[in-house]
Amino acid sequence: MKDTLPALRALLTELVALDTTSVRPNAPLIDFAQARLEAAGFVAERQRYTDELGVEKVNLVAVKGGEGRAALALVGHSDCVPYDTAWTDALRLTEREGRLYGRGACDTKGFIACALHAAMRAERLKAPLMVVLTADEEIGLVGAKKLVEAGLGRARYAIVGEPTSLVPVRANKGYCLGEVEVRGKEGHSAYPDSGASAIFRAGRFLHRLEELARTALREERDESFEPPFTTVNVGLIQGGKAKNIIPGLCRFTVEWRPIPGQSPERVVELLETIRRELVRDEPAYEAHIRVLRTDQGVSTRPDAEVLRFLAEETGNTPATVSFGTEAPQLTALGAEAVVFGPGDIKVAHQTGEYVPAEDLVRCEAALSRAIARFCGGSAG
Image (cartoon, rainbow, N blue to C red; front, side, top):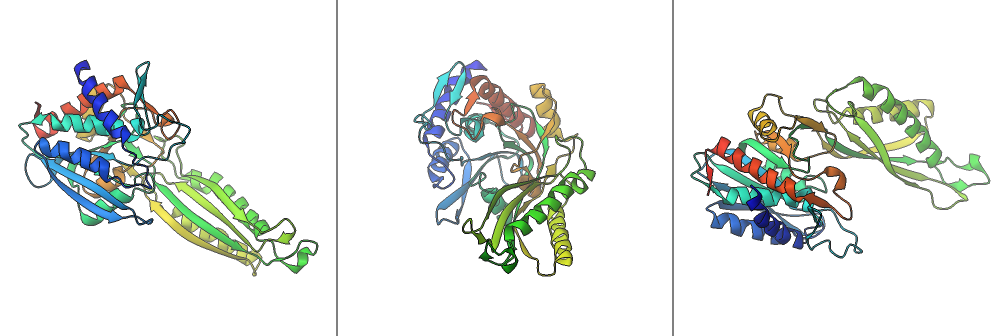
């Protein structure tokens, strides 16, 4: 299948050249993909929405081979994380030692190139094949959630593109965010009893949260993950106005990644328990909890046909990952979903992001055979 590399490289060159950083419109990439899919006989539908910054975003759902529920969906997100301006070749695909460099080459334009190439070559389909391209995955799976709201993108099986080093992934943890605002009373720092430090109060909250993260959350486990429990992180904290003012306000962001099967509200319940205990100990204590995002984890049954198929095709044992994907949304739309794609997640989101050329070739071959297996088609 080495003869597919020039075509895959050409597609990826075009895709990388399109700046689809999440704050920008993704329509140029959708235009590019839709034109090629329609030329190959797909019927395409766009779902438009406006993001929080007022930028128009587009999801694409393209189907070939009949109407009704698709037998197989190939799903990729069109957006990328920002790149350092010092990386002058970020939007120009370059190749060194069998690696193709560029923003999005790994996450996930490499997969999109493979999916487009395999889909455009599919002929004589006996069951519908679907290609889904989403927006704003990197900032909260927004596009995929819009599809769920509209009931678009229904398929029996789904291969969700992410850089998994061609390992079929059957489960991923969820992703949740909350903000805790702790209030105190400002005063002169020379007279600590004249006020109440919101930062000290936040410290007491954080101490208890750390204890529960090390105890209660580790009691519920899924040994297929590493680590096998729901993790908690406080990655942002801010408070105070000056070094000599007792701080009246402190905010911190709590991130947690729930294991599949656990309610994403579990950590919210723990946060509320902490708040109540602190109020009990100090009646003047004031804290407010605001939930920003609760995306649950997902797990596809180990004997799912699409999972077994990709394991056999690649020779790679199915695995789980602790990062979030669009598999929960495809599952919500009725699919048995597997996360799969070229490249290593560890090189994504950084300057010098790349995808191995050999991964592209092998991924495209696996997707082509998946189309033949589940849609009854053949490569043209």
